[in-house]
Length: 373
Image (cartoon, rainbow, N blue to C red; front, side, top):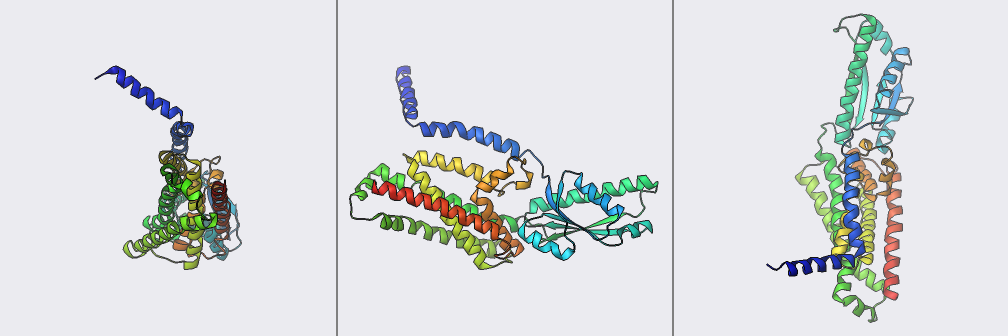
């Protein structure tokens, strides 16, 4: 083995890397980004769950119970509806994840030495949050009972608050019921971005792109011909994954078919636009692959697909609103698990429409400009 030849080969590789500054930046930024995301997102607990309180008792005891939830740091009371019937729209829209219902006469029952039942309603559209939230609620009620007995000087067996937990939308807390709807969007995004990121850069490397520019083909014709096969493949893939979830995994579908269709098509155009932009700015296929990985890792971690958004630090949570997959998950889980309609999912659908218009529109404009140059 010749050390000189090895040194020359090493020098050649470093020289080639130096000529590709974008790839070097991606390789250096990716581990730093992964360290920050996983260090802050994975290592924290679910806290500050948005909570609604329906206090029908309006007594000192009900206020103490509410204060016990507020002071736990696991629950943040954001809504105080007047009746229990007002809770359903809040849960449908995802405005609250947990609801505490204190019936009228709770303090009177405790004064008479009777057990006082209260209702704790948990949103089951995210099985991880619902399991953790119901566990925290039970612990808080148990601590409240212990503290009350200590203050009254009564025995441990004395009656107290009885927390009756009800999980809405996914009573069995089966994680597959919330995972499969998210997988439909995640698989679509991964495959579309991986394929579309190679669409233009592959032709540029082979030299066929320049040859196409000198033909009578118009920019609109090129775009339609380029995007139609991928859109058709994405539609077939979407239907295949959805059918597998419904018929093989027996995931219940409680919503409106058109809500899911509109949400997925808006998300599909966003994914096509992202992949096309990556392909336009990349000079090599390897560079495009690295760029897709750079986008996909924060997307999967911060969107709520793997880790609940509520488990992330408050400074990171606003960043999830910049990720299209976040809103696609809200639409799919809301439609599949909750049975939410267009009105309940208006915010995430409008957000997906905005992403589709901006990202897909920018990719089309950039492609037309590249063709007409």
